[in-house]
Length: 205
Image (cartoon, rainbow, N blue to C red; front, side, top):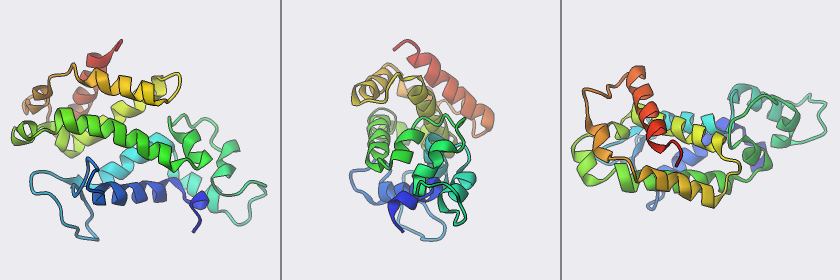
C-alpha cells in the first residue's frame, strides 16, 4: 500500500516498530508487542500501545473515521489518500495533523525524536531508572505525549527552533521529582499530576 493511503493508526504502528528497532532511538527495545514477542530491555519497557496512542493523539482525533475516509471506495472526493482529509473532520486540531495530511512523515518522526531524545537525556538516566521514575511507566509516557501535544498546539509554528526551545525548558526540571512514588501513582490522577507539573514548570519558557 502506498504511504499516501496510510491511515493514522497504520502510521503510528509503523513509528512504533521503527522507534523500537532503531539503535539510536530513545525507545530502542523498550516497546513491548504481545504478538511479536520482541527482545526488550530489562531495566524498563512499556506496551507499544502506549506509544501508538501517543502518536495518534498528535495527528488524529478520530482515527477510525480517518481510516474510512482515506480508504472509502465509493467516495465522491476527487482527492486521493490522506488528501481526502483536507475537507473532513475540519474541527480536528491535532497539532501534527496538517503535516500528516501532507504526507511529511519524516517531519513527524523528527518531532518525536527531538522531544524524546531530550526526555531520555534528562529523565531516563541510569540514576532515574534505578530510582524507578514514573516517567518510564505507562502513565508517564502517556503524560509526556499529552504535554508534547499541548506544547505543539501552543507554538505559533512547529519549527526546529521552537522544538529546541521546548526541550531546553525541560532542563529546569529536577528529574528526581518524578521518583516520588507517593505523589505520582499509577492512576489517571497520577498522570494528571505529571502533566500539570510539566506544564507549570515550563510555563513562560
